[in-house]
Amino acid sequence: MPDLPTLANLIDGRLEAPVGGRWLEVHEPATGVVHARCPRSDERDVAAAFDAAQRAAPAWASLAAHDRAACLNRLADLLESRLESFAQAESRDSGKPVALARRVDIPRAVANLRFFAAAIQTVDGESHAMADQAINYTLRQALGVVGCISPWNLPLYLFTWKIAPALAAGNTVLAKPSEITPLTAFMLGELAIEAGLPAGVLNIVHGLGPEVGEALVTHPGIKAVSFTGSTRTGAAIAQATATQFKKLSLEMGGKNPAIVFADADLSDANMDTIVRSGFSNQGEICLCGSRLLVQRDIHDEFRSRYLEKVKALRVGDPEAADSDLGALVSSAHFDKVMACIRRAREEGGQVLTGGDAVHLQGRCANGWFVAPTVIEGLSADCRTNQEEIFGPVVTLIPFTDEAEALAIANGTDYGLAASLWTSNLDRAQRMAARLEFGIVWINCWMLRDLRTPFGGVKNSGLGREGGNEALRFFTEARNICIANANP
Ligand code: NAD
Image (tube, rainbow, N blue to C red):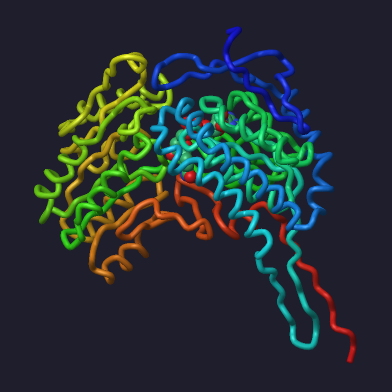
């Protein structure tokens, strides 16, 4: 592959080829063409990155918070100044519309860096006085070297969501982006050098999960692992590290419900949000509502309005300004989603719209495109309604009352995010308290305040990210007790 852009690891402030000299092909989902090669690193690269991170750790941890924040802010400023080239790269690597990367992914990566740069300078300390006896204070210190592993669906957005709090809290980082979408993390590594991040503070090692990922999480010197990805990989990480007693934050899969009550305000804007909650980023967002529960009283009318909007979604070249959906991220993922649609039909589902691959002309003729698909007529406990598909597939499920909606919504092994549409505040609060999900959106979806705790329950997550939760995860809290002097 002589003319392909060649990515590199970031180790000790330098861009390095993998020690073993092996490479992975990176595909452009919209065309199916290989557009870059990325290091297929191994445990030797992980060891070198760890050593660099460990050497850098004491000086980074002892910098004043505002000096660490200044580094993150410089990185954020550089990223913002290159927003367009990052958006183009993210779209090329992942298949998402470039307009989405421009509007959401890259601005959010900038915001992640700035948010944690600010948070580390304003975070409160804790102290507990024991009358006449002592004062306790909580000393929160950086852990040392931490591991951050991120998935392909929101590549830079989730990469920065992890490294920003880790670095802000004074840790040095060994990060592994997804091998399917490595481009923007590599580009961020280049910017980290330009921003003057001290060598070894941020190390990025590219490669496969079972090779680099496993070597990273099981490295005895890695004090904590923040992982986002599938439940299966989360379980493998928990198992592989069980005897090492390191901190784990696992953000995993979902099978999220969107619940629409008859009393909901179904304005055009709200209908658009409900459609977006199923199909944004080709349905490849862990927070997408893939089960659409609709109260029977309004079911038929809702269905026809909903289908009209879904049918109007344009699947197209991610570079085109009017594409609502781009390509699925990989050939393997395309095959998986198509197999899930076949299985839904076998389970008795009726496909109301979509259900097929989309064949585009021109440069996208060999891309991995799937039509937005809506299916009805399935039982709540069939595999289609229980297992994560992670594609542009939504099932319609009617319900009669609150109790039935709750039973269906809670009736999976997952518990990441639910959205609830109702104009009855009592009902909204009652339901929110009983829905077994880490996030409940009421009359909205994907409205994110970075200060709030983020994470799932059940098989969707262990631990919380966001705001102070992330800073707590990336620090060790110790109790210092000072006895009062004798009176
Ligand atoms: P994945 O689990 O296949 O991979 C995620 C990351 O883990 C990749 O970097 C991969 O290389 C690495 N990895 C794989 N095997 C590993 C191992 N044995 N040890 C260490 N690391 C390993 O997930 P994916 O397909 O990239 O992403 C899609 C999944 O991520 C979906 O299930 C989705 O719901 C989930 N997700 C969850 C959230 C959340 O916040 N809860 C956000 C985005 C995506």
